[in-house]
Image 1: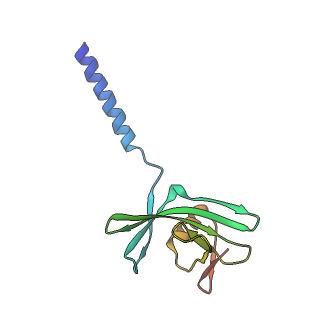
Image 2: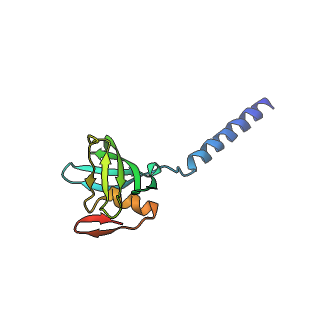
Image 3: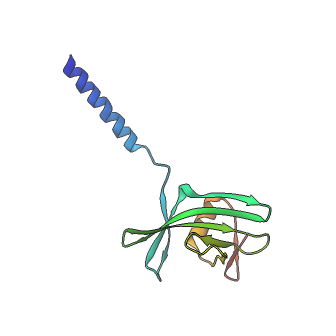
Length: 130
């Protein structure tokens, strides 16, 4: 009887571990771009996307992984913002914090996050607008 109990317990634990491993994870890293000049692949950590509206306009934040030859090189946190009718701008944790930079098309990080949020944008003169 004791052997049967141990066997049954082991099988039950094995089934629980198998089910837990088969469940989909909610956080994923999504490839969005390759920066040829730096030979880096850019992955958005889609569970880091946050967004909102301020009195001056919309904003969103997202974190990315920069990967070179299969190795993580750096995690970069982005904040994109839009001031009234101005074009979209961004700042990252790798910048000095004194300014923002205009988002130039085709930015895979920007486009992926905008699509995930469900916000539309248009391109004019090489810049993104809303």
